[in-house]
Image (cartoon, rainbow, N blue to C red; front, side, top):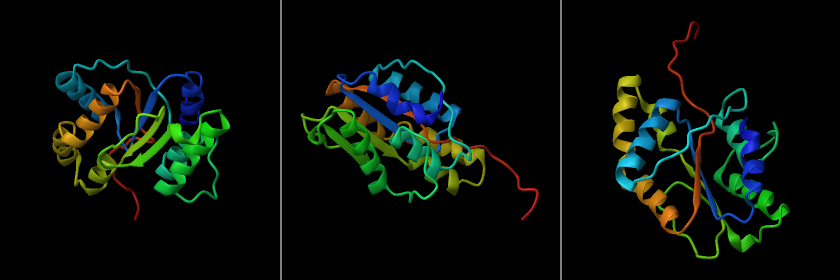
Length: 181
């Protein structure tokens, strides 16, 4: 299982109303915190499975692989607009009408009832990771984030609208110390 297989996996459930939530830079312990918060706040119990990111594990390659559903292209330019374009191209090519597709990069979701496939990217954890001095700060910030109204309310909105939600990440994060400049 690798990030290039996420959309082909969802394609097998073509008739399902589904939402793919990609949390940029989320690692395993952060995912565990998010799932505990969803269980406590929304009564949601998640099935946990593992996928692997594209190496090198950077947003430009791994998130592209997720939204393309295929091997990443080295000439790709990373942007929310390009991710949305990849998302729509994949689904239209597989028989889903354009009006049934929705992509959003961060913020509060606002969905129309005709939407069957939602792609939603959350960059908060990646931003926190880059701004944290160490894991102590990242842990404290993550603890706050998993209870933030935006992520909780967006997931609640998707559940209330009947979506099956798949939460994944494009890559994780690991604290390291450089041995050179």
